[in-house]
Length: 503
Image (cartoon, rainbow, N blue to C red; front, top):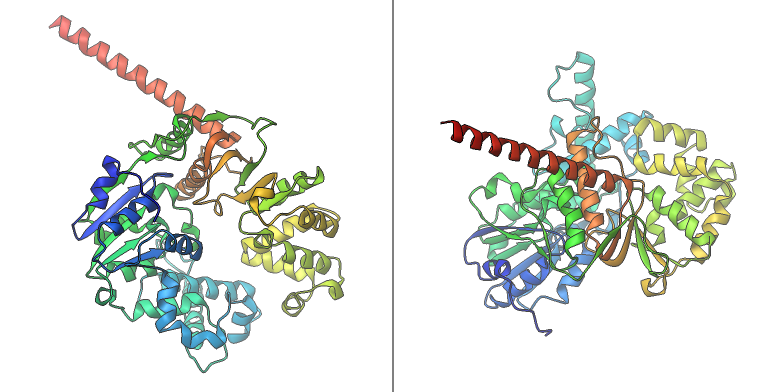
């Protein structure tokens, strides 16, 4: 086993913890996984479940934790007892055409509302489908009779699809979130098998998974960073602040070993914008914050807000012959689907490889209409790319030719902010496709989500971080805010002194 470094004072409080419930709030790069591994080594007589956010984190954890720890995802737990029975009808996702055919409708908005309602239920901790799962429902508004009837129809449609999905004999496809939801509804008792549950990345947990963990009677330790919550749009909630944990102990990991004092200044400006008063301390090697990466740094990572931005960067880089590594693989960025859609838009169906596209849509015009009606982000993004670029097949051929499978052979690495979570690079450039988080028109919750993405992306850098305009504006704003606060404090102190001298 690799020799673990000695505990820091913050880590020691966690690795020696003996209480029943603990919430660990860990900033970026603060060695939270190492801390949990140390905890496991200090409790070798305990049977521990490490609940990972995804398979990649699970696989990495298996290499680090001792033998008394089972490393699993929530879906893996559920598959062993329930999911296996649905293996013959499991699908990656439900298609709108599946929904529309099942409820006998050609109204794509209605089908999308049913799908969204069903997905909201499967991610929730609720025991049945509720009207609140209807994504477009305005709970603070009195509905007209027509709106009320429509909402009832959507919920009834979702109930019908749920019944068919959960019927093993019904050929209607099911999805992985379906058997996970059934597992949660069955109220599994993990305390029979484990003395402790380590719940990692708890800031981005689905309520259905949080419900499974928080209903257990064994010791539970949750770890995460609310400022790295980036999947709220998928229905994820911050389990660290669950009402079930009101009486739990709280500890912190604030010393980051990934970056030094300069990147930490950027991180703290973003944290301060959200009202955070506890700073992250950069204890890594010397670092720099610039506006652009120097031309001689060699390999660099360029991080984006959008898939469109990733593709634009890759197109530009490959035109100059650069070798590109895509975090998650090039196909994770809808490259194959994009080429099929291009030929579909050119009315050349024989060149479309994925024939489902031809079955589901009459023509490209209908595809665009469905995208507009449902506001599906993947479809809308694909339409934008097709309508913005010419010679798509030739461009994609160049992209593939200049793509490498191993990062060490790349000139640049490209990723979205969502996909870069948990990764780190020496040299990081933030791409200029992030929104302005100082925009007063931005919804407050959406604003926090966007700040979190900037925080995640900024804290991937170890040696040099090159800013984009969004972060630069935040730093200027926070700097000015601090100056004003300092001046106000000095004025208040001067007033107090003057009052004292006149008494």
